[in-house]
Image (cartoon, rainbow, N blue to C red; front, side, top):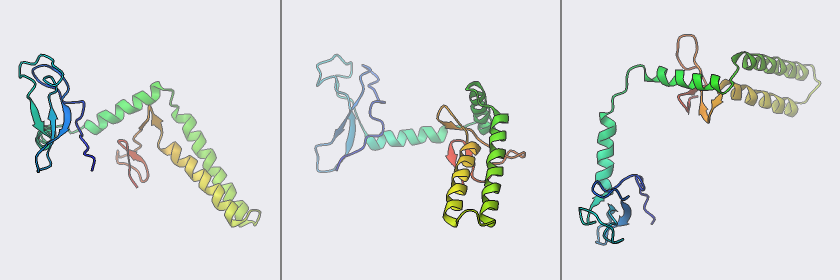
Amino acid sequence: MQRIYKFAGYISCVHCGLNLRCKTGNSSVDYGYYKDMARARALPCPAGGYLQVRTEHVMQQFGELLQGLRLPAYWRDMVREQMIEAAQKAGFDQEAMEREKERLRLKRGRILKQHRDGYIEDEEMEAEVAAVELALRALEVPETNGRLVDSRDGRGTPRYGHAYLGTWRA
């Protein structure tokens, strides 16, 4: 079974600065370690290249670090404003997007009317409406540099089916 080392390449020796390598213990108990390889590479290290840390200890320390983080109460608004700013710098045009959404809504209405009047079959209508809905959803969650822009109603709460800080909420 292959072990996954979550901090591989991020942990280094405090004495010599070399990255600690991932190793599995040689005992009957299956421990994973991050180990200083200075001795094995014949490189100088004040600690002699003997530094090693168990993966469980690193995970515990990282968890404690995360628990100690305190974000300001308005951090979501700060992130949202930065993302909107980035979208505007990238050429995001709110008015053009609203015009396109209105065009798609009207198209959906025309498709439904054609179906109601018997001009198109059920399957064709479902496919056309699905395509319009997909295009509308893509407009509801604009991307900027690979990030989703938060979309909120007038009260500042997320609307149904919109991106909320990069995660999809249904």
